[in-house]
Amino acid sequence: MKLSISSLREGIAAGEIKAVDVCRAALERIERYKNLNAFITVIGDAALARAEKIDQAAARGTQLPPLAGTIVAVKDNMVMRGVRTTAGSQILFNYKPPYTATAIERLEDAGAIIVGKTNQDEFAMGSSTENSAFGPARNPWDTERVPGGSSGGSAVAVAAGIAMAALGSDTGGSIRQPASLSGVVGLKPTYGRVSRYGLIAFGSSLDQIGPLAKSVEDAARILAVIAGHDPSDSTSSKVEVDDYVAALGGDIRGLRVGVVREYDVAGLDAEVKEKVGAAIAMLKKLGAQIIDISLPHAEYAVPVYYLIATAEASSNLARFDGVRYGFRAEEATTLKGMYSRTRDEGFGAEVKRRIMLGTYALSAGYYDQFYGKAQKVRSLIDRDFRNAFEKCDVIATPTAPTPAFKLGEKSGDPLAMYLSDIYTITANLSGVPALSLPCGLSSSGLPIGIQLIGKHFDEARLLMTAHNLEQALGADFTPPAFAGS
Amino acid sequence: MAITRTDVEKIADLSRIELTVEETDLFTEQLSSILAHVEKLNELDTEDTPAMSHCAPGGGDIEYTKRDDVVRPSLGQELAVENAPDTEAGYFKVPRVIGGEQ
Image (tube, helix red, strand yellow):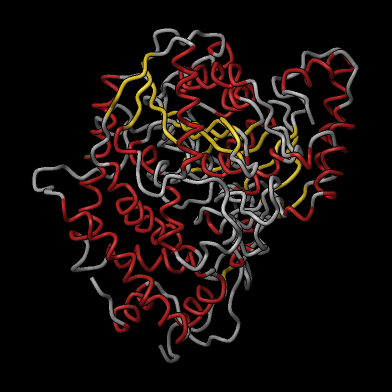
């Protein structure tokens, strides 16, 4: 699907394209590319009915909403009334939510057509989508490799041209890392920019919903619709929403781009380093000023994150106990036994590991040593960003240390998996927005992403910078097997 | 810092997760290696550093948003129990709590 959000809308308005045909084509592609396992639940008839309404509105000559006909896939940790929502977990295998997430509601009100709920690591805990109770998703660039995670299904749906855009959630890199590994654009907005109402909580002080798309412009159009205060989420911000689409036309001459001294670490793949370096050189060629900056506490981000995120998760996931929804283990005869067996059988290994780590970090005698300590170091990481942004406007880093890795390569070693989030975690700890843009291919033909990090609520400048870079690079990131289909 | 099997059993109990013997063994080993990595934080002196529990934009106090205290429609009993594995007369049904073995 080569259409952009705006060209599709124009085509529908002019009567040249039927939303129903576009929707039907998307549903056919879901079926054709079932081997990628990008979707957990497909929304067929309801999607076609919505598309039909768009066509009727176009035929009447009604002004079409901004996302009219846009085919969107949504990560399965966002609730949608009456549509099975599993968060990739066996414990929610049959859950049909009685309400809809604000971000989804806003997309539908803007004319988007949601065709399905995408595969993910269980409760968004993972970096490969291998921790899904519904089997791993596969990378369209090489189906023996992971698409990244946890929003892997959303990244695959966009990369394979099934959906024009997708929603993901990002707690430590779960939008940006799969975007990087799958060759699409992924944006984690500022904490509080998008309502979390209806997002199944993982780490509440870190979680943020954001778009994945084929282009920066399409990502901007999705963000424009989902951003803004929501009375149902008290942490959603009342800061005014900028005009992200208009901002894309801006010029990056004079922009100060920070390059992080500490990020040239062992484990950074040589080709990733080279391609990200070339993209930074391109920013310089476009008139940006490249500035050496320091994030002295960046090396502590992974341990801080894995204490804070797990502590919050251990509390958030206490609600899954076999009483109100989802799976219940049948054999238990006592209440506590029912809880404990339900949670052992209902949760996968990574989720149990994280609940236990978080419970330990919060337990009597260890709280100050682990959770308290992590909160203090989080302050230091936050301060690093504030200092860095005195000297620069945007920070450029790799998104992930390597291109897509093989299925099974890291699944037996949790710590190795955690280290694939080394560049993305800091933005969540501080709450700043960050975006991943494809910037090149490895010699084996795998996409590589550059991460751009901005100041709080400075998404407009972030998108403008990424748009300029994307246009200058001028590359088409369509997986070879999906070109021309 | 090494974590023992007994520690893991205690954490599993606090977490209300009934682990199998194999899981207990595996988690003992894996949690030990993760905690060893976390030890790195002790390199830093944070005596005078404030704890950060949320990322309030702008670094100041969290921006609480309030709404008027007015009655709004709620889910209602029927929808509230719709997803429950077991119900009776509109209530959630669970194994016996009082009078049985605990």
